[in-house]
Length: 473
Image (cartoon, rainbow, N blue to C red):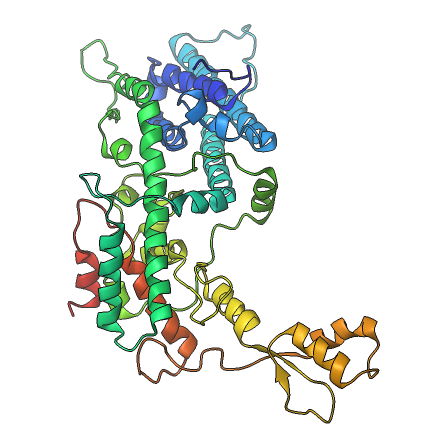
């Protein structure tokens, strides 16, 4: 299908920026040599963003198509890419001017050169603009999270031969839980197994979508990466290099390209959810409960890509995140905790039994409001009567205490009579341990189950870093 992009589109503006970068990096002058590494790093960051979002993919797979119903988001991307294009052009002009000035002396009568930005300021603006479009990409992806999760629920888990392994994993998770929690209720065990599968599906679904985008975009991306210019070694009259330059070329088969995980799901983003997400700008909230030592051993190893640049693509949240979030195992564990959505309701008869919660605050808030709140009768002759729902209390007031309250007041009276029963969790449903804080204790059980559902990097089988730091038990 031929592309039907408007003259001003994300793809069109991104192509301009890419061409500007290539022209700049092929500039043959001594003025560019001190900036070699910086410019190639920024070009790499730009290519990382474009490849991750399939910016240059065919129309029905590219970012423009996925944002066609969210023009306000598309416009913001276009404006930022226009700024980036202008800044790269400014830098090119500045370097051209400096090269000209080094080759000829200006006479006293020569006109003064036009006032331009300092090179450092232009590079800073380029760096900030690329960071901005990366952050916006993360916001847009989170805005479509609900649609992604719906599609992931029907995703089929397969092995390398294409065989559906969902039932095998279900049996494995059941045995795992039964081994560690011998007296667990069947309804809770089945719920945990279901959410372990769901969590794994969500992660692998995102990776699957990314692989398909990379196939769509592979030809153009690989051609561009193969011809990414290296900076020349400028030589003086004696034939020796005038200055060393770091001119490492990004290869088409580099790990950064072949191991790139997913980001935006191939779906249209709802306009309302985008606006809400952009306003809140909330990725996910981490719980305050720490990982227990056993769970530490289940944390996936820190990604190697975190040591190779200022940002990397997380295998689990599938967002471009700063490398500072994986500089050591503790920081990486904190980030993984955000991505886990490890909490589920442990109460029977829950209206949302498979809902995943990213923080202990959300999790406890659900259980308090849905399962541990009682509505106490305000009448003095029923000092200890507590009912299970708001409607039950209103019915009780109407039938047992008629006329005591006006009908228009019953709703407000019932709301004022709501009380949360504490403790929220009265005993651990997984073990017989008498923990001091059951909220933290039960939360750590759920974190452990969540960690065991995560797919690990294919080239690793165990977390040697975690074992060396937290023990080998």
